[in-house]
Image (cartoon, rainbow, N blue to C red; front, side, top):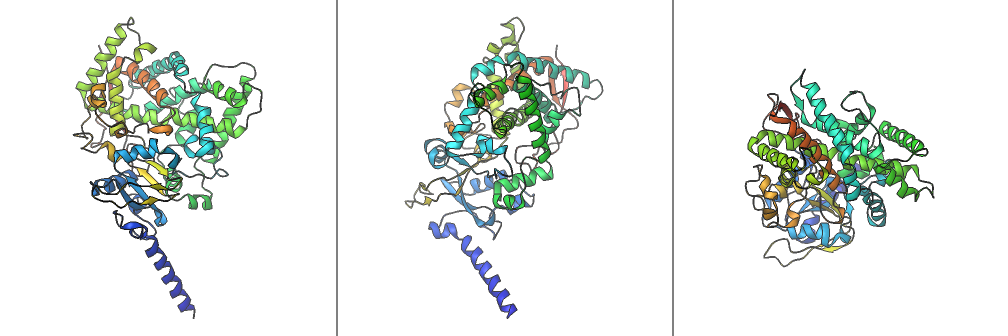
Length: 499
């Protein structure tokens, strides 16, 4: 009898997975890659064979005529990968109300700080929390940080000068992270992060621990993206407990100091907004959560973009010289100094940044959840059948695949900043470039990221010529286990004095 029960249970499980793997067939013979029971189409991601960005790129390329492709997440939950740029526009912008939630689920009880990040929220809570941060990143406030950021950039160059006397080889991600963490600490909290002077400084150690490509970070990312139910069951926080406690102490000390003397920085603006200029008591989770948001917006993705830009400029010396020629022409107009007004004239440098984000986008996909039923366009050009996308279904915008589509970007593996000069940019659909996202969920820190990155890169290139180090492994590969873009074996550079 026991054997019969076991057989029935096995049969029931097999029938369930057969049924769950047939969702897109039952929905209307939707085209897509064949799934595996339990693992759907993401087994290679779980085993570390491929990055999920590569998996979705393969789906994108396998169905070149499709507007969208049906796929299966872990536990065979259905989802779609969007191919057509008009549908990308619908999801991110035109029909935003039907796709206003990121498919990155966290439990507020386990991760209270992330619960205050607009990235993890939807609906009215997303609006409220995004508005609280939008007022911090106004252009006037960003412009006002120029002297502080320039001071950090000067320290950046001094650090390169000191260090290369004993070791000429620099890992780009490491040095750019030191720069951006010092900028965020200075303009955000009025703190010297000591990245350039103290290898054991707490601020950079805590910031780096959020994104370091360790096995634990990989597990946390995988669970949040692909198995949030399991993450909740296992009570695995995305932010480690020791980081949570450090941020709380840091923010509490900052608030205590501000009672005696206010400071004109981003933290003060955020705190004044939350406290309605001191008239209401601020929830600690609110202010600490938004502080973590500011750190994530201003630190990791900027350092990634800067490090890959330096790599591309080192690998393409003629483009590097064109960037420097523009820079020095702009500086000559202001007596040999870089000014805030001059930053806006560095159009070729900015084009090089955009081309870097195209080729080396920090995020491989923009994952959304359908928040109310939506009628999809026909899957193929000659098809008339329309499928209703049900609420709760995963929707993937494959940024990596779109950025390397030769139909959109000819010779996509060639670094060519001219693609992003105004005359060429206007000839492409707006949603063909997603380095900062698009629509209402456009990256909050985009303007600040460009601001601090331009200052850092300009100050560095005015002093040094950047070259690839003999330690650099080619071809340059990214880590398969990292949620955000991260070089597999580092980006190694040398710096030579310019005349």
